[in-house]
Length: 158
Image 1 (cartoon, rainbow, N blue to C red):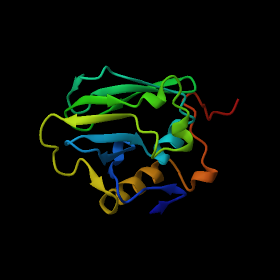
Image 2 (cartoon, rainbow, N blue to C red):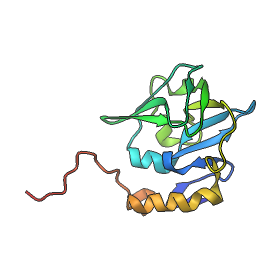
Image 3 (tube, rainbow, N blue to C red):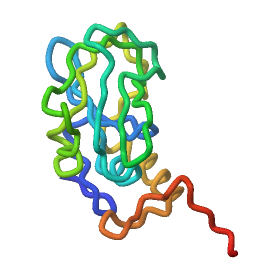
Image 4 (spheres, rainbow, N blue to C red):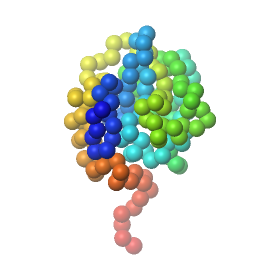
């Protein structure tokens, strides 16, 4: 399994680097979706996941659910138009298993509403350069040494 700066990136998955999501074909044209180890490291410890209702239709860039990490809640967005086909019942009431098993603790299954545009879901060799660029932006050198940035952190000296 490819390892990049201490994070696993299974080469059997597809990636959308900007959203820190992985995608696994789940049959019937669906994709099982989860958050990469790198995405979890950036978020801090994941506590809760609240999906939209099964059957919800979303355009590309729209939220299919909310993740809560500490006191921060943020939307998780689909990179392509889709219908939410299934939500992972194992993440209700707690999504903490994502922190230990990011590739087993998937969020939802999405059914694309049409063709997925080329370049949206990338195999590992194509996703790696973009993921490395994002890691550089966050000064992410290694998973073991990284501390998620605090959104309220102020670097001014008092």
